[in-house]
Image (cartoon, rainbow, N blue to C red):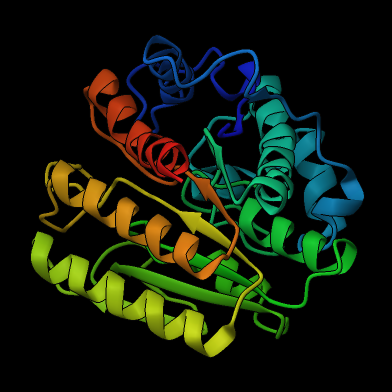
Length: 302
């Protein structure tokens, strides 16, 4: 059984023409239900994250001001999401979803969160649609409380995981790896433990070679006991916020090679969906489903 983690709060009343596709989370869950991959027996719903979890990587005052709607106009603009009670609820639940997914992965080998990957959130400010950094929160929590010694964050979103790199910079037990378009947002990069900046227009073969080579190198170097895999689909050739030329088949090959490699090494992996901004929201949901489909296929074959 492949555990899938989701929550109704992930998609809430939101401006339909906003660049961030808030409805994609509900559409993804509906697509997976229709495909028979999301069922009552493998559905897990998180509750709100504890404030103590958030405070492991975020400033307490920043957290409180967000929850109480006391952000400045500049902070809201940098986040680029309009404040609402719905945003607060999903921002508090989603990190707990990634924590739950990671805990499930430790028991089953693979688990998938139908959200997550908010890797631009920094210690005391939001950025790029990201309020709280679920990847950093999960890594810190599991390292501190689950008796893990080494966690790898393998980030294949087209944008650098700058917030993750920054907030975990002084945490040697967490290894941050980001494979991203070098000329894309954020334009001021942080320093990950491993950064691979890709040239604009990179196609399937070249991209997949980089992913395979980098994954083997960082796993050999860090020997992780858990991998948090950001399977962002904004690497897709037609994504309006990407700069690469990766096809849907290339995304499927990427997810397959990452999951098969980690499975072959006996390393548990928790996946998050990361970025994807296609105006065709149904097509976007199907693209985000690829990592879940590949995880289910791998488990069924084992």
